[in-house]
Length: 95
Figure 1: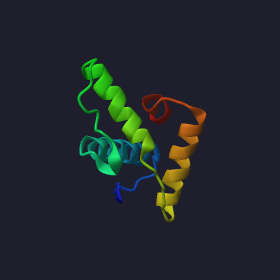
Figure 2 (figure 1 turned 135 degrees about the vertical axis):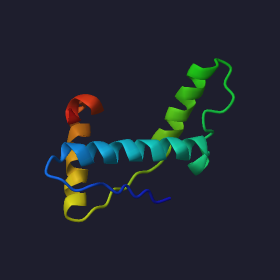
Figure 3 (figure 1 turned 135 degrees about the horizontal axis):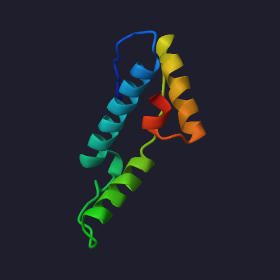
């Protein structure tokens, strides 16, 4: 599966980075919900909604991710990877 995340170009790179992050996260959730990649999409769990959410997160974690970009797209990947390495919450790092 390929997920393309188009974004508007501007000089405040936090804005397109946040857009890319949000769109990719939504696409990843949709892939899990549709049971892409062999995940159970949360499935029917004995502990209800919390267990379903945990199952969906585990399925999402198993999906491989390879990022590619050119020019500003590559810069966006660097910014997002750096924020992920710092372990900073999405809202705080891009605010």
